[in-house]
Amino acid sequence: MHPCAPHTTPRRALCRLGSFLVAGMALLGALSAQAQTTFTTTYRNGSTYNIYGKEPSAAGKYPVYVHTVGTGEAYDSAWAKAAIDAAVARGFVAATVQYANASFGSCSTISGRAKGIFNATSTSSAIAKLCARGKADCSKGIVTGGLSQGSIISVLAKNYDSRVQASMGQGTGSTYTVAYNLESCMANGKHAQPGERIRIINGERDMFVGGTEAIARSQAELVTGLKCTGRQSCFRSNGSGWYIVKDLEVADLNADHCFMGNLGVPGVQCSGILGVDPYYEYGNNQWGVKATMDWLKTFVKP
Image (cartoon, rainbow, N blue to C red):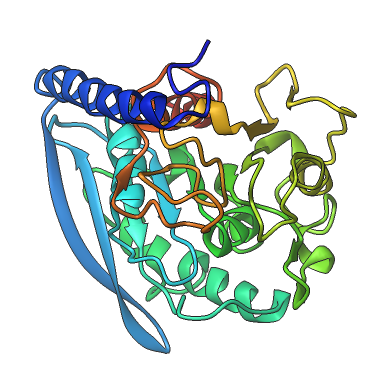
């Protein structure tokens, strides 16, 4: 049984204490990780935007991981940095990219933002700046990941750079509340990235893509083209597919749109901005960032 069960106040307190202990243990392990170098740069898409990244300090050429954050999320948030850390530890030049994410948008709006980041024909795009780095070798492959609007950009990345080999999305669907229907660009077959190169992770309490496990599942099925009626997870033999995170699998018992957050308030979407869920960041589970990066690595050359 997960340490956060059952839903009682004393148990919740113990769960949060356990979360800090897990994080502390992971920190000790991180001290022995391979040396990394931090870098910053910029790119242009109408305006100038920032890029924050890390790369292995060891000599060599590495494939590239690009992360795009959700609407209103800082490009260098704790959630984004957790993804970057997991990627660089697996031998990627890894970066999180700022873009005009103050608002959501239609397929055309978000596609324009994706093009600004991943336009392989432009020398001012984010991917051009990253691929020009001395330790980056984009011919070995590019992989992508992101949250919410950033997950849409992640899936659409291959529309603009054929070197993108696989994409991960968190809080991903085609219908966001009642205002936006992105099926014309997000349904399987409507984007260049084939379903068998996509992995979607959604929380069962994700109100932005529906609010129930069944709707979170249906949205993941629509994007990936992989259907498994009534299942919590469904993966192809190559690891592509989807997973629905349950409340009892996260430290704050709140598997919402931002299930990777910690100390969130149940019913308040993405309120766990204060930290990163330790089971997401350090756990050995199918929905955590370690498993995601291990999966993405299978599609690039060493």
